[in-house]
Image (cartoon, rainbow, N blue to C red; front, side):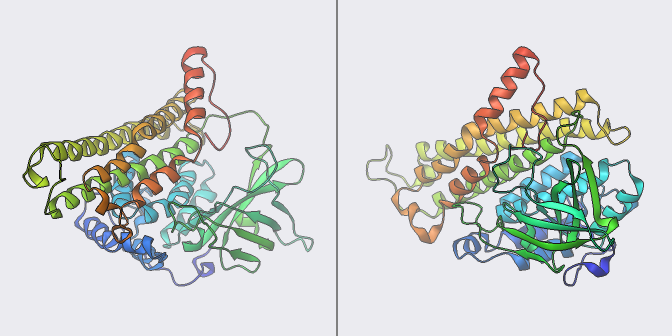
Length: 413
C-alpha cells in the first residue's frame, strides 16, 4: 500500500510524532477541548480536529521508535486515550479502530504485512472499519458482504453494506471484513476514495453523535493483492487473542475520560453559582456548602476509580502483548487480558451512568438548560456502555470463575 493512494493530503510524517507526557501533547489536548461541547451540541463534525491529530502523529503512538513511532506502551496509550476523551470523547472514539489496526500490525508474524501496515500508519493515514452489519447471520465472523476473485484476474472485488463504521468518514483507509469463497473469512484495507466506496454519516444515536458510526456501502470495489488478507474459517479452532480485550478496554478508557470531564464541569458549575438551594443546610455559597462539596468529591473519586481500573486492565493487555510468539499470545496471558477487560467494563458501568447524572445534583434545574449541554456526558457514557451488554460480560466472567469456562471466541468479547 503506497502513500499515493491515500484519500486527500496527509500530514504527519516520520518527523512529527507526539509523545506521551510531552508539552506538545498537552497543547494538542487543550486545543481539542476548546469548543468540544459546542461542536457536539451543534453537530459540527470534527474534521478539522482530526486533522490536528494527524498532523501531530498521534496515530503512531504504539509504533516502535525504531519503526517511526512514539514507542508507547499499552498503559501509556490508554493514559493518552483517557486524556483525549476528557478533551473530546468523540475524537477519542473515532480513533478506536485505527489503534486496533496498529495493534494488529504489531502482533502479526508476517513481516511483509507488518511493514506495509506500519508504512501506511507512518504516512499519516488513519484507518477506519467495515466490520459490523445489519444482518440475520449469527453474531461473530459471519458476513453478507463478500470478497471474491476479480473476474479479470486482477485482485478481488468487495460487495456489501456495513454499519457501525465508527471513524471511517474521518479516515483515509477502511478495513473491510467479508465472506470469501470456501467458507472462509477475508477482507482488505482499501482507500476510502476508491471507486465504489460510499461513506454515510447517518448515525443517529443519542450519544457519541460525532463519531461517524454510520453506513459504508461497497459496490464492486477493487482490491489489490497486497491489500487482501485471509483469516480462514470462522468456525475453525479458536486461538488465543487479546484484540477483543483491547477493543473493549478502549471504550472504558473513553468512559474514564468522560468522567474526568464530568468532574471538571462539576467544579466549574459550583464555582460559577452565585446562590445556594433555598433549603440548603447552610446559607453560604455552594463553594462552601459541605453537601455540595461532598457530591463533587464523590464524582472526583469515581473518575479516579475508572481511570485506575482501566490502567490496571491495560497492564494485563501489555502482558499478553509481551507473550506473543509466532503471532499469538500465550493462552494464559490472553485469557487474563480478556478477563481484565471484561471486569473493567462491568465495574465501570456499575457507577459511570450515575456519576454522569450526579452533575445535576450540584447545579439544580438551571444546569439542565440546553445551552450548557451537560446532559451530553450521561448520553455519551450510556451509549458507549451498550457496546456488548454488561450483564452478558458478567455472566461470562462468573462462568469462568466458577466453572473455568473459556471466554466466547468471537469478535464481540
